[in-house]
Length: 362
Image (cartoon, rainbow, N blue to C red):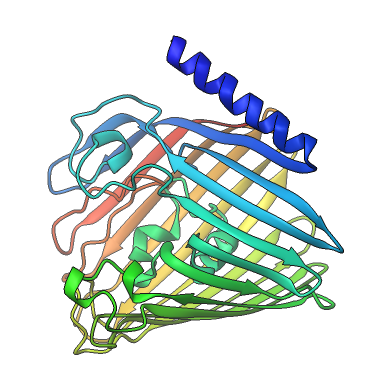
């Protein structure tokens, strides 16, 4: 306890000094706990108290420093944590809660610094990929809850990438463009291969004005030989009618068949149709996702999802969601949530998930 108090006192002292120099430093976080029930898995049904159902529990520090002339330094460092305590759940449980090898590590969610000005924004470090942001923004479930499109594997697109330099243009009458370059050393190649090839790149163009939103993105991730184990094109759009927001999403991943990777190298296409209907201080969520595999026969899947969120305040909300996946005879996609990857059924089986809980942001 004394060590914790000392650490907080030191952080407060540094924050105070930073504010005195014209900087703005903010400690922020999110804690999400819910009861989940997954059925149809190969190991049987699972009921548990889960950390990070709608959004992964996290804590971070972000800030800006005004450099004058419209230029500012910006940064964000963020780590995940397990809010439900230790667990003996299956290996598919989040590494934050199992402490297993390969977990995200300290400040493993984000860690970047950049400059922002009239020219746009430049960021360097570990960041969300542009394509992942597109998926999270278009998904009525916010890439969380049991209805997330991530249950369909997000078609192999990485959520985050290390050793990234990115640029985002200023907003020009609703239009923005962005790009990210990924160094090979950030792709977790073997030590002897990490400098042999470009890790990859991500391009994005978007338009948002009034009720209309449209985004087009392309991402390529390479193996040490320069072959793409992810080569994905996505387009998404939305229209807000006021009484409901309707969204659509399409993705086509055509990786190089000779790429060296443990990832799935199949040519996969998927589309999602969804809707968000405001109801008082809450909203009803629904989506339908269809996935097809052009490489393997009978390896497609369909997902139906419904949910509801209710805001108790600007920072706290309650949620409930249900999703069901029907797999073709050679597929085994599974319902999960924002943190758990799902408990996969045997090939051709179905999977269902129900979750309800509370999320608080601070």
